[in-house]
Image (cartoon, rainbow, N blue to C red; front, top):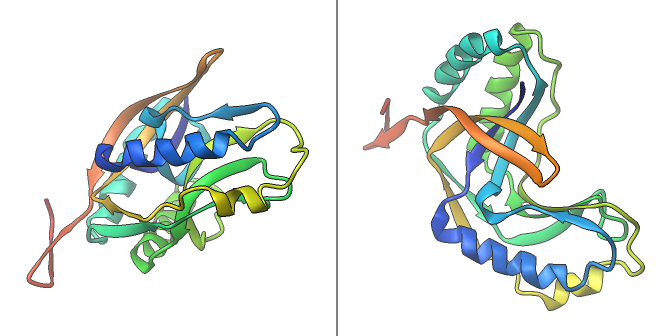
Length: 193
């Protein structure tokens, strides 16, 4: 089964992100696959095809890691493209990865290495994929980005989710397999939920 780890997007900001995507869509002059708002998430780690039996070990690793990380916030304050806005393959909304997010990536990487997954480079950006661009744009999006409403929200990261992704002709269908709450801080002390 095809899987990834993610932080879900709170429904309260999902519509705001969708409106930014709609503004951006007007400026994309080539074929693109737009993510439906219900599938918005911050990808933490793409795991790829895994043996279903491995989910037991994955669950244990994720529980261990999330017990060490308190809930945190991710700024969503810009729109961009990978590898660049001149020739993007992915369009996103996101912001600088906060320290707890980078700690989460590091701890997960250590745990996943023990399960046979390859090392993953740390991300300096936390992002939500809005679209995958299929062709080459006739005009760079640099100027268009300046014209659209820039996001200015905060995503509250309270959960890590192990998600299954089934590819269909209509697009990806995501199914949560396990949800792992981050530790909660009370008076500066980390408390397990």
